[in-house]
Amino acid sequence: MSYEVENAGQMTAVHVTVFGPLTDIFSGNRFPATVTLPATADELREQLVEQYPVLADHRFRVAVDDVLPASSSPVREAAEIALLPAFAGG
Amino acid sequence: MQSHVQFENDELLVQGGVPVAALSEVLTRWASLPHLGAHSVFLGQVRADRHPEGVVSAIEFSAHESMAERALRELAPRVAAEHTAEGVRVFLQHGLGALEVGEVPVIIAVATGHRAEAFAVCRGILEALKSEVPIYGKELFGRQGYRWKVNT
Image (cartoon, rainbow over all chains, first blue to last red; front, side, top):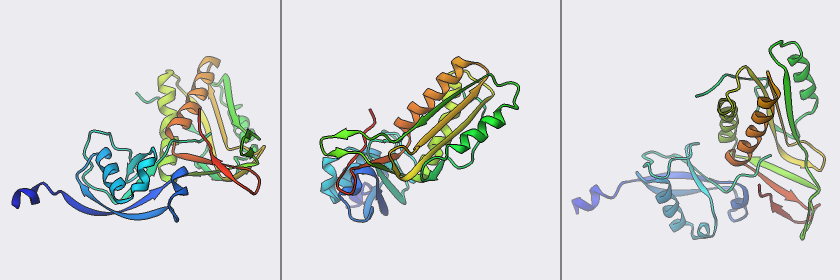
């Protein structure tokens, strides 16, 4: 049991905001989620897809507190998560 | 390496189209700087693209504003450094909200000593803007229908 607790990570409540084409699938562009940290950007994506399976059909990058984390480095804290599809400025 | 770049404007994101008059003011200011010898300007304009779903009447731009603002501010010095351009002056602004055909979503104006750097830095900033800045465009087909703009 203690082994499981040590490896469970920290459950954190976050706000998730979606942009661009992802706004078509969520009413309001913001929703709550719970993530377990530390986690890499890829792991965060998996956790969010598990809670919102509709995300599985979309390509996007995960930004944490206004930063795009490197894919291999673990994110230890998060308050705001943004899901960013391909950019289209200009 | 980051080379020094001086921005002419504080607001890199504005609501509505980028006012073309701002460019005239910047060019007037640059005329008094003797180290400058070349200006390169990119001005984007909303185009009435034809798609199977309809003809584009406007593009509604949105952004992750805090990230976009920071990315816009950071990319110009990096691009200037890549082209070893120094003493570079930049006016860079992107519009947000619904912009009709003919309106201006972006102006990039770069002034340097010589033409090669001016062209290269202006183009480099544009390409970086398109691929690195979280801005989105919803192409509206009159009052009915839309599709999300895709940068190629």
